[in-house]
Length: 56
View 1 (cartoon, rainbow, N blue to C red):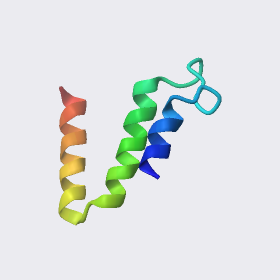
View 2 (cartoon, rainbow, N blue to C red):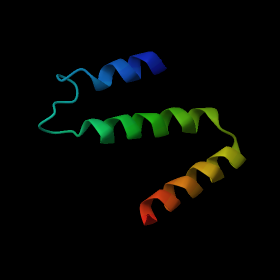
View 3 (tube, one colour):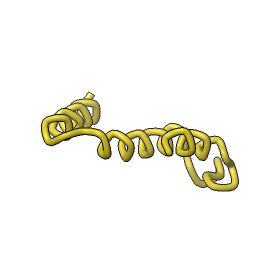
């Protein structure tokens, strides 16, 4: 499934560049993937890093 998600980011029929920024699509799909892997502690770390990166 992860490989398909990565492949989809390069499919301009699914994510046309006129409507989506590549980096936003990749970050969103990566966040979705990570949320499916981590436990509560990992989720807290993801949230911490997301909040930290937004303030930099």
